[in-house]
Length: 171
Length: 179
Image (cartoon, rainbow over all chains, first blue to last red; front, side, top):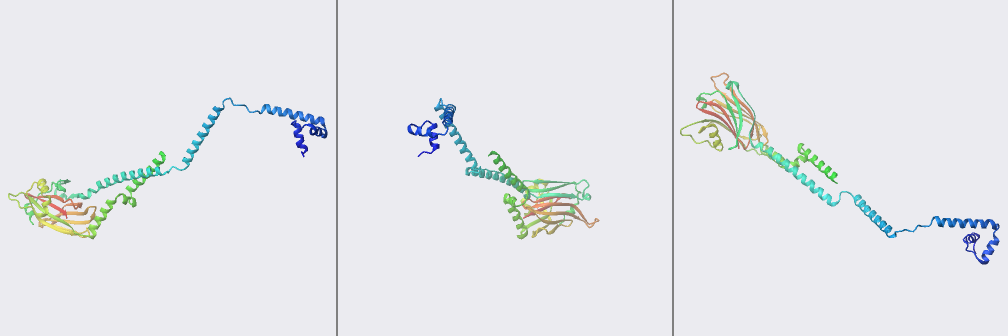
């Protein structure tokens, strides 16, 4: 048993026929107004059909190709974003960074140790820090310090001291 | 990536350079031999005495038949002969002192000269010493006259030779050797 709304919709669409159509039209309270409404609905349907019909693509294959390209491109960029978001410290990069840091450390260590060795040579040699001569022992007396590398001897060389008589050589 | 690498390297270099200038754990890590040497030096000088300083007043002159060079001067015979031009070296005063703490005092004396040695503690690779050569003559006033004074860092591997005044036809030399 159809409701009135169902019969009304079917009547507007022209789907009622025979005794059903006659019975429905007889039940309408204002036949003229209903006919006017039916015509308006048909006009609207035609208008919508005309205006909203899907335009047929002229080159379907090209469109399909473009779509696939775009999907593929977006897929690749998504993969890149994923790998970027996984962090800079990947295992290979960590290894390379470690190796590089170790190399820098070794270079610095060698450099510092060389510098250290250079500085450590000084303790092997006697160093005269200062020297002074009594003026009464020689007014123009001078002091020079040098190193004799043959026997690794440090020499404090005085010049201009007063000569003394030979008895000063006594034990 | 490159920026992070540069940043990492810069930080590392800063830490290294800071460590090389300051004492501390990093300094010790970077100077393993140095710290060992230092401790070894302290060890040797303060806890294991046995280093002997030979101090000598030596008269150098030329003789027709030169005597054999004293044993203490044998290691530096070549230098003495070539540098001073004498062929005979005679010890007129000497002292052999064992260092225990490195701050001992001693002297080597002859009739007219005295070499005062005032050790002032171990230095890196040797000992800091103050040396005074005093000339003694009862006939003069004052009888003791400081001819020469010097502060020296005496190394174990490097003897010190001081050229003193000319005496007669020879030359007074002061020699210090750490053994």
